[in-house]
Length: 243
Ligand code: GDP
Image 1 (tube, protein in one colour):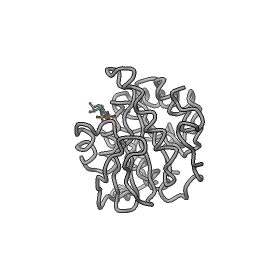
Image 2 (cartoon, protein in one colour):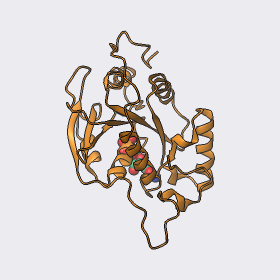
Image 3 (cartoon, protein in one colour):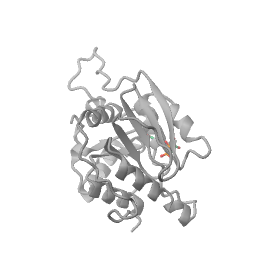
Image 4 (cartoon, helix red, strand yellow):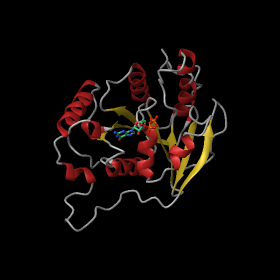
């Protein structure tokens, strides 16, 4: 996977290896069509019926998930949908080029909601992650300036337990100096015992990391399904991240 190394120069962050000054790097994901397919609101509820590969995006509220998804598809479509009342706690599905589906998982851990409401996302996320055979990978978002929350850590443990391919997008890297962002990314990679190849520094504001993420998503989509997800009932399966 062509991901920037921590000490790569900023030019390398645009993707293609050594492009000539006049040649724009090839866009790894040209968006011809993006279609909102609908939202899954409850365990066992409606979800789009298709065989296309899915790649899901997870993160706490305010981590920059809508901004990242919009930057990825170069549209405002996702922000528009996710701001619709009632949609924020749903799993929202977006078809891309009729070829794969981006899945916007509900943002978790919003400080201002009650503890009960806070835990609402878990059964739905659990049902989705355990029962989606066409799931090809999960992009977990972490804010460069924040230490991962308990919810983030539970989510990461949960994804590790499922053994689903996982990428980490470290968001809002423009908020720190280049050296500061590199140091934080190194720290996140080390403390979470990640492979640096899995970690993509990202900024929706500058566009940094957009092409690496697009390329990584396309790779996930093109790879065969990571494993036959065992048909387990969410209630009787291995422990939910709620603990
Ligand atoms: P979501 O709740 O995870 O969907 O987060 P949003 O995409 O709505 O972003 C939350 C806040 O962070 C908004 O105020 C955004 O403008 C800001 N934000 C998102 N991405 C970036 C980024 O790359 N850089 C900076 N500086 N701010 C960002």
